[in-house]
Every structure is written in structure tokens, then in C-alpha cells.
Length: 312
Image 1 (cartoon, rainbow, N blue to C red):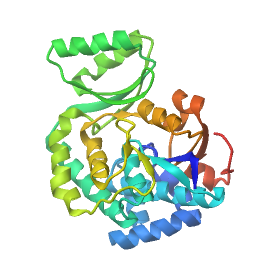
Image 2: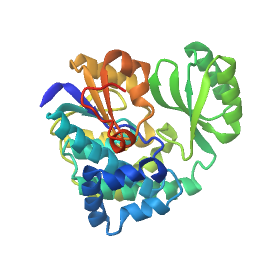
Image 3: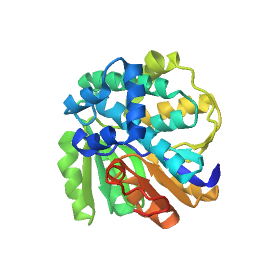
Image 4: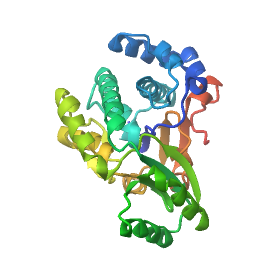
């Protein structure tokens, strides 16, 4: 086990069947996990995933967990070592929970499906006009002034994530979205992905409570067997209760990647193995400047491009 290598399960990036379907069919690690998942769920996940058009559907989420876990299986075996440290920003928490042994892979699949259905039900009636916008290259003080101006008008906003310097996720009402984008552009920044439904916002405390009482309380969540870093504050999760809290925090606390990378650096980690479809965390300046990055992703594996020790 290597304490200088950390495994990172990324948050959900674009991963439609067109993006990852070939990988799921040809890779033996993916086929094994897919068969296991279909047995647990009681239906053919690949078929359901193929037919699904919503990029955040239950089946897309389940496929993402399957692929991230299968890529971790491949990376561990081909590298010949097991990373001793783990983190899973945003949706990556789910695969991370299985990897560190706090939940079985089967229970992670069940939990993922149940939470996906609960979120879909919740956002059909609550916060229907809220979206989460990712913005980059925004100067700190002018952007803070813009948000303060929204507050002065009684306009809702929440910080949903801090990814890097000037790289943020912000939740606002959709009628304010064009104003937000215009302000970011005027500051010299860029607006990127708009997420519907929104994520990681303090306003979603009721969703967190339902996720706990209606779903998570039925699962036995154990203490991590590896060093696990909390994606909301960079702390080390040591107990089953700490793991439960981290999983629930994803509903109403912003992710903090700078805090996570700070802890990784303090622990002496110098290489990150990112296992999953990812077009964000491995490319952030804070990631690239501080670590050697090995990206183990479906497209690369399907094309035979996974080479241990290579950099993306």
C-alpha cells in the first residue's frame, strides 16, 4: 500500500452512453462490475443506461459508480499497488465509500438509486427555479461585491463549491442566471456548466434530512479502512459517524477542493490516480501544480491508452 499515492473518484462529468458505452462493453473490469450491479439491482443496467437520455438519471448515476469502481480495479491491479489515501469530491463520494470499505459495493448501488429517486422527487416541487453555475477566472473582491448586491436585493444565492482560485460553483435562481453570467464576463471571467438540478447548497437542508431519515438510516455505514479525506473541508474521516456526515454533507455543504489538496499535500502525497470520467478535477491548476496525475478514464482505457506512470 502506497501512502504517497491517493486515489480520487471524481464528481460526475459528462458520461453518456456515447461517451462510455464502448468501454463498458469491452473492458473486463467494467463487465465484471456491470454484471455484479445488474445482479444487485435486478435489471440489466447497461440496457437501462442505453435507453436513458437524462444525463443525471438514476441509470446514468449508477453507471458512473460502476465505471469509477471498475477503473479503480484496473488501476490497482496494473499499478501493482493499492493507494493508501482516498477522496471523492461531490458524486465521487459514493464510489469512495465502497473503496474504503464503509459500505459494500452492493449497498452503494442501492443507496445511489434510492437517493437519485429521492432527489428527482424533491426537485420536482422544491427549488424548481434554482440552478448551479460553474464560473472560472473570477476576481475575488468584485465577485463578492456582486453577490453582496444580490443579498441587498433579497435575491437568493449559495456557494456550492470552491474548486480553485477564482473557480467556483454558485447556486442562484434561474431568472438571475443571465445577470450572473454577464457580471462574470465583465470581470474577465468565464461561465461554464449550468447544473439542473442544483447541488451542494445550504438551502437544501430539508433534502438532507429526508435523505438521512428515509434512506441512509437503513444502511450500516462503517469506519473507513483507508485514510479518507472529506471533500467539504479537507478533514480526515475516521469513524462511521464521520462517514455518514460526509455523505449527507453533499446535499447542503459546498465542496472545497483546495482544502482537499491541502490535506493531500500535508500527508506527503505526490501522485493522484483519478479513476472515472473526469474533465475537471485532474485539469485544475491546483491539482496539476502539486501532483503527478494519472488519469484512468473510460475513453483512454477503451483506446488502450492507459499507461501506468503517464501524465494526461
